[in-house]
Image 1 (cartoon, helix red, strand yellow):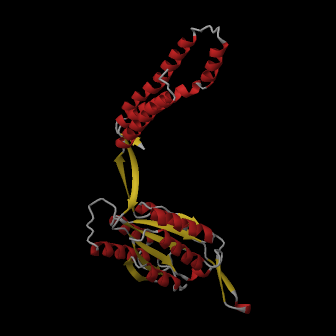
Image 2 (image 1 turned 180 degrees about the horizontal axis):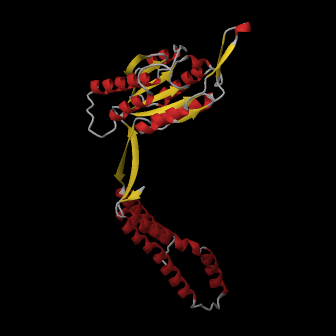
Image 3 (image 1 turned 45 degrees about the horizontal axis):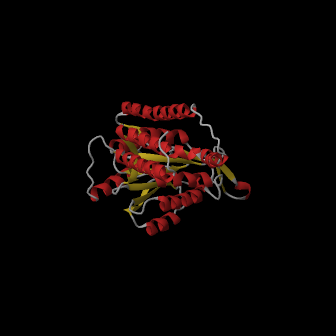
Length: 326
């Protein structure tokens, strides 16, 4: 929360001033004792003095009313977020051979599949989601759609293949997202971000393809598209193939540096996941935050209503306890 006119918050000084004034007046009254010769009258007065704290309830309500009124004068504003009606997300997933590695159990690809299912569960239902897989070359599997069942079926069919054409994969995802927005009638204003993003999951450095990752990231930035990369795997990850005496292992460490550069170039945020639970948690977070618009609204009326309510409570408390402001 912030305030359009913060200098008007100085009016809140009236609250401590009121409290100090009330305490001073109350103490001044206490200087004039009354002598009681009738013990019966004194017995009736003592319980009343024990309940003396109730006299302060109207004052407390009045102080809260003044505080809310002072805050309302400063024009408070809050930042709210809501799902964008035109939001489109493209899931871009690496299905290279290194996704067979089991350093992320049961395998990297299995963990990625589980995470993408969680992502779909968290994403608002009106969002459109597309799916692009890439290995030695990119393959657009499903154009952005609100049909979650088709997406889940396609995700379940993903299998590890060969190399890693990361840049080409990003290029295809950018084209898919732009095409979907155009078909929906969205017209982008120059210099603004589109209501959509690419969620990229990859576990290794590029070793195939034509377009370099940062070149593709530049394409996304020009189109106003943010990329949220997730680097999957551990530095000691490896893929084992062959059998018997012909068994061999190939190291397949992830490339978080390139993923961070892609995120920085497009205004997104990069993540690193070394366990199945962490990649699921990352996709939960992304599913709850991507594709939302943020705006600030003035809530002076909220504080004014609260001030009125506290003022009414002060009057009611005064009548109930037969008290008045000290």
